[in-house]
Length: 88
Image (cartoon, rainbow, N blue to C red; front, side, top):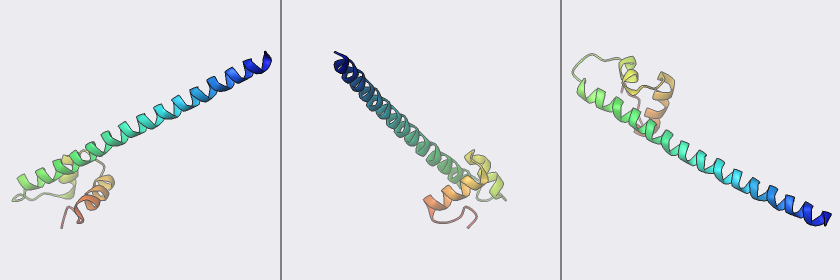
């Protein structure tokens, strides 16, 4: 009887571990997709700002402000997506 009790708890533990792993993966995937959408929106907002204000004197800080990202993060993402810097 004691062995059955141990096996039952072992199966419960394994089921719990599998469920936990599944939920963590699901949360990670959802966050990653949301994060990608947010980053693409930020780059799109910056490009739209540049298109609207191309005739004005705008700085990198103005463009970064339009993206709502940090300057470092914006520059890295912009270069990755556009294969150029925002000032070029």
